[in-house]
Length: 568
Image 1 (cartoon, one colour):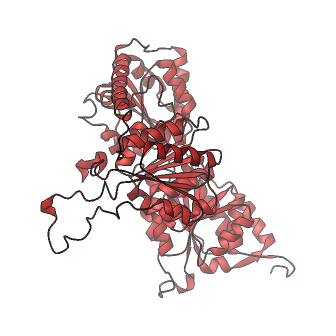
Image 2 (cartoon, helix red, strand yellow; image 1 turned 90 degrees about the vertical axis):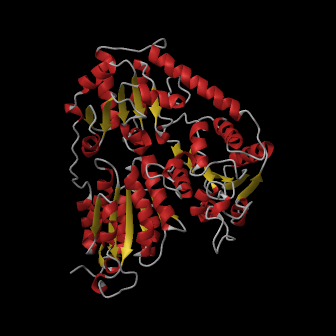
Image 3 (cartoon, helix red, strand yellow; image 1 turned 120 degrees about the vertical axis):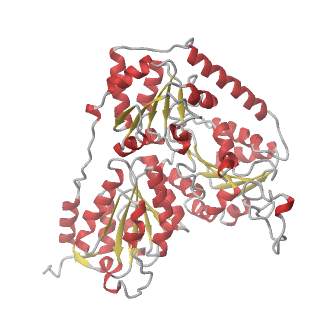
């Protein structure tokens, strides 16, 4: 029996101490029964808590924080409905292979199965979306399970993990002596992790690249997560091989680099004969690596941390391992017998010419000041304003159909991990959560969100969160009156008993989104001309305070579903 003079510590406090001892610096979430004390005691233990309005946004923030920092993003929810809301963020982490941990309260164990308050089998609910899940059935298990979920989230291929905290366990108490014993025993859990970089056929990979006529290097957010920019840049500079980033791979090597093939994407994919794909999956974003977008005879060298991913894609050569380490080995092998395509190589010349031609066409289109705004005129102004910020470059958050599609072509990333968008799942609603994560993870950087009005609407209430924490986030809303641009129906579709209702794609025309920021003490701007937009960007970027810029767009400027019309 514990000495009566010893301090008693409850489960909420032990969770907080466990998180702090495990190195967690930030936790996102929504408080309520039974986890409010977990949040307040985490703050007391030195963990910053960012309180949201909705668990979805908190989960999206945690997933992006995991990507940006390389450490698990942690978020807290209440039981049952809070846990279900949080699944959006947890599943998003899994889809993008980012490390995140959801911690949810749950009902009293003694009342489970009897219809208790917010009762749900939460372990079963999270099962499809996590790498690892655990339920703390006793206070003594809390430190070990906290360490385990955090470790599993980053082991191997990163992803989501879950920890269930029953209400009764949070109210259990132990002495501070026992708590320290459990905390000490929990540190450095043994998570089996196999790394096989040393046994890879690096020589064959280099031989394929050396003997290729039209080699291409493709890299994605997996390479960004691995902090592979230095060996990646070294490889490109040494070999002269053109490169193509996926959307969130942009910036690992500057978009402005002379070997960038982004503006010649179709040519690069369609004609390359050997493709080194680093930290990018051959999924829909890369057309599954199949014709007609790729050559029938292309040989893929696939670098991925997951053996299962390589087995699924069946490349010509698979290299299982951390992207940074594998690239370092490739560079080491090339150093023994260097090769470089050179600027006059026919393949490099073809890519360069096509890219320059396409950039020139885009710049001609961007040079026009179109009012009422199309998507290109404001996007050019935003691009120039962001580039003027220099280094450290702002982190760009982008979501929406036309807004994200046009932004992907126009906006420029020259630094790693400075672009966050809808990602592998094409998730709408991530914007404000990502903004908050970026501002917390990289406080030295300005955060600029370029959002469609539909995407913004999913999480618009988190503008209050921006203001409450005074985060340096500028939210730019492309307001075209609805999903894809309001009412796009043909006359024969406007029929039936509810034909006078607004179209399913329509919002209130000319919505005053900027007043949302002002309502909470932030700054709001409504702009419709180049001069107004330039002034709003200049003032808000200089202030580095929460702001919403409402950019009024011609409702017929975009297209339905953006570049994904074939899917709709």
